[in-house]
Image (cartoon, rainbow, N blue to C red; front, side):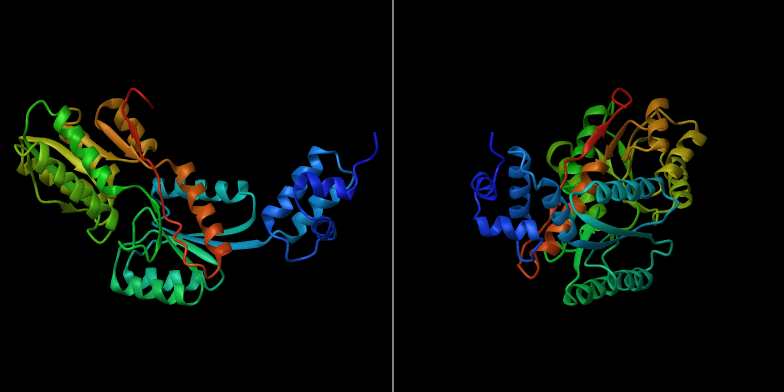
Amino acid sequence: MARPTIRDLAEVAGVSVATVNRVLSGAEGVREPTREKVRAAAEQISFYGLGAIQSRNAAVQPKFHFGALLLQPHRPFYKLLAQALSAAAASADADIELKIEHLEDLSPENTAARALALAETCQAICLTTAVHPTVMQAVETIQSSGVQVFALISQLAATGQVHYIGLDNWKVGRTAAWAFAKMCPAPGKLGILMGNHRYRNQEMNETGFRSYFREHAPEFVLLEPLPTFESSAVAHEMTESLLSKHPDLAGLYVAGGGISGALAALRGSGRAGKLIVVGYELMDTTRGALLDGTLTLAIAHPLKQLAKAAVSGMVGAVSAGSDPVNFTSVIPFELYTPENI
């Protein structure tokens, strides 16, 4: 059979001969989807210049510089999230340099300063942070410089001015409430631990949680939430306080950071496994607590899917340029019990 020609390649790819020649020469101005069509067609017909097309496409592939600003490095969830983001960037069909930083100091001033510094060398950044005027001013400054900003895990704006990658936290809260209503032997008092009300995801969790009880199980008594400030030590102290003041506590909802401290306090009190406890994420701490009965249900982010959505969202936002496109992606959450881990 005759060797496939450039004209044959153009016909199979559905493009002009001139476009094929531009792809072969590595000329600028050919869109990435078109280059990929030509490459796929060359592979399909065993075109002699397939290797050249592959190398030219790789040479003109854009380089993306992204950043991620996550919470404290000692927290297992954020270690796992960092690993998932790195893996997603490495496996993406793009040349991505991802710089991941962690916040030890969660103050608004430090968060704003670190976000501004990270954005200086990035085309897009994603960050997990509480909503605060100082932080939002920094976000606006970053956006005005042309750098795309993504809120990761916790929304920064309710109206879509900032891309969001995370869960539908109102549904998360209602799902947690449903679990208590169905699993508690009888209606009773429920304690609530929150990291910080300025984290919009936690605020929405509590809103959804309370809305379910108002609608379906008003006989339960929801205690006022106690702040843990994302600290295991504080969560330990707050849990001990709840158990001491409310010996008839029916359940505990850990809606913010510090779950390891809450679980330790439950075990230390001798009441582990004697009340319904719902918390977040699947990691060594919560996995062990599910297995020994201290934790009843874990609601978790699917980290691989979350990280992939974050990376592809940043690629899409940067590629879109000044086009007003929102790359928000709401990810389905996962439920874990002792029977499915």
